[in-house]
Every structure is written in structure tokens, then in C-alpha cells.
Length: 324
Image (tube, rainbow, N blue to C red; front, side, top):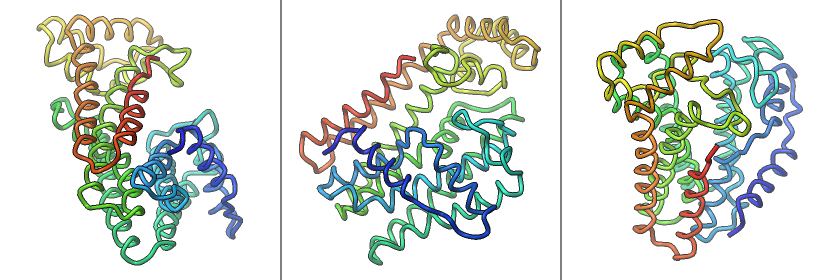
């Protein structure tokens, strides 16, 4: 197997060679633009890695990996429109660079393009990839809708929040890995296990993102620390703090999450103090560990060589060591 950086190089080279120079330009140029912005591209890397875990050359999984990345970027275009976000990876978002209508239509086209990449496989593999993809794409939409709904609700529960991040984020991580397994034509048991490995790692990753949003290092986190607090987002940290807080702390927290001051510094610091005082920050760190270990448990059941189990475990450990 290759290193993560080597898989990233393969993906990067592949995407730099993809050309979408078709007409009408205003449909295809935004697609080329969003795909050119790069990022870590971890999801397609996972597809390549999973194929090699099951003894298949990673390049055989490139088409499936491309579909995963094209779909992910389609969802980002539409998310940015919904959030009215001006920047994506430090560059103008598609709807800002062009307009909202272009963003909607180019995003729609990307969803269809993603399916077309599966056509490069034999019928049985195509069927299994398309079936998994359809299920995952719908779940991502459901997760996004729950996220939107939760903004207006004051009674969001922790199980509901966990289900939301599972659908919005983690299912695509699991699917990316299972697609590599499907291309490799491994057993159904192995394919399901590597899906669960990715799914639980995806939940752990999102919980860690919630934690780092509040407690990360602004120099290395890559986005504004305290952004979720500013936006009054009901993250796992917030929900645990509400559950664990004393009456006075709860009243203060609810008040802080009902205001949007011009200068957010005091609000962020006060909320973080409550997160620490109630034990919510500690509980979130514990949940991150639990989901990470849950993903590792699936490795023991997988019918693969021990050195490959070690590589997957190491990948998960490195992902969780983002002490930023």
C-alpha cells in the first residue's frame, strides 16, 4: 500500500487532467473551478486506499473516487448558497463568482456527472456502486435538512444531533471506503465492515471538529475559532453543556446563544468557560475516543492481512491527533 500523500498525489494528478471544456461554458466552468480548488480530498483517497486494502490496484478505483469527490463538491456548492458563504478554501464561492442560479444548475450537473463515472465499471460493480451512492446521497440531503431544522429548535437531543452528523458527514466517509471495497469485489462482510470503519471515524471526526471549533489553535485550525458559538450552533458541546449545567449556568448559556453581539470575543470566552465548567468539553473528548475505538473494533473482524489493519488503524489515529 502507498502512503496517504502518495494517494493524494494520484488524486491531484487525476483531477488536474480532468477537462470539462464543454458548452455552455457557464454550466461547466463553475464545475471545473470548484474541483480545481483542491483541499485535502480525503474521501477519494479513502476510496483508493480501501481498494488496495482488498488487494486491488488503487487506479482501478479512480472512477469511483472521482464520483465521490464530484458529489462532495456538488454538496459544497449548494451548502454555500444555503449559508450565503462568501469563501470556500480561501477563494470565492461559486455563487459569488457567478450567481446563485449558476451555482444551483452547476451543482445539479455535478450530481449527474458523479453517476456517469460509475459507467466505467462492469454491470455488477456498477449496480452496487450506484445503489450505495443513491442511498448515501439521499442521506446527506436528509442530514443537511436536519441541520437546517435544528437552527430553529430549542429541544434538539443528543441522539438527534448524532444522527444528523452521521447523515450529513459520516455516511459519505463510509461510502467512500465501501466503494473501494466494491471495486475490489471483496466479500459483502468485508465491504460492510470497512463502511462501518469509515462511518464511525466520520462521526469521531465531526465531533472533533465541533470541539476544535471552540478550543482549537487559531493559527492552525484553518477557520475561525468560535465560529459555531458566534452562529449559535447547537453542537455536541453545547447540548452536553445544557444537559450537565446547573440552573444558573444553563440560564447564562441559553442567553448567550440568543444574542449576536458586534464583538463576539466576550461571548466566545464565556461560552467556553461554561463548556469547561460543566464537563461538556471532557464529555466531547470522551465521545471522540469512543467512536474512534468503535471504528477500530471493526478492523478485528475484517478478513485482511494484519499489516493492512495496522495501516487503517494508523490512519484513524493520525486523523484523531489533530491537536490544533
